[in-house]
Amino acid sequence: MPLARTRVGLIGLGAIGLALAELAANAADELDLCGALVRDGTKPRHGCPVPVVTTVDALLAMQPDVVAEVAGHAGLAEHGPAILANGVDLIIVAVGALAEPVTAERLLAAAEAGGAQIRIASGAIGGLDAIAAARRGGLTRVTHTTRKPPASLMPAADAARLTEPLELFRGSAREGALRFPESINVAAAVSFAGLGLDRTEVVVLADPAVDRNRHVVEAEGEFGQLRFEIANVPSERNPRTGRLTAMSVLHEILKRRERLSVG
Image (cartoon, rainbow, N blue to C red; front, side):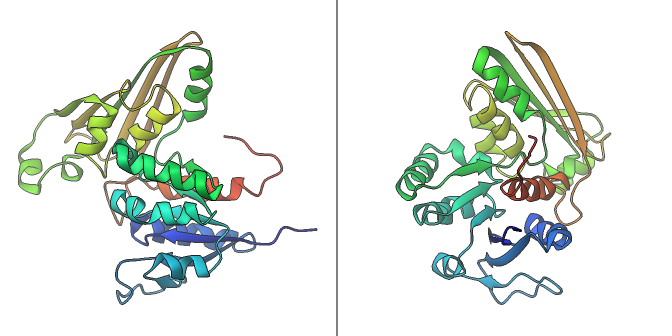
């Protein structure tokens, strides 16, 4: 007997949410994007098939089986706890929001109260399964280097003057996530897979020679050494995020339905 379509709610309907809606159209026999929680319900969204609501209660009334957060740190902090407390699983992209201890505590407490689960989408990165496995047997070092076009990290005037790579940040993933909330979610995801926000080193570079968002993850431990590198094509709607991000959310949603899954 075929499974009923999974009802999916969204927190946010910006660049990632709209890209997800486009991708989900190819899986319409498996998924129903039943609604999206947005700040401004009157904003034109031409051609978008997802109904919009402006309150958590209205989104929950649509009876989603799972909700995907694609709204950024503020949206996750504001609405995530209510979703979880009502027993609905939550897939998150704005992983860096968990660098704020209060936000992390509220989300985890709500998940416990509602018997729900928080799942971190891999976003614009990979290798998380290997890092998470290595953590079980002794992981000693994880470094994440992000290299992006200057315009996605700096004010336009400063970016235009840059002629060589500039290191904007080097420190813990927690510090990086708080300083670059829209650009370091991938590093936060790597941190939760491995050594945590305070023991994962992050380097952020603005590089005028690159036209793609590039990430290099290096790890060492009892398992040996790992190096993962990816060059993401930026989203047309928002150069701070890669096209792969929406794909990762769709994969996480569909994985809930699979009898045999990978990653």
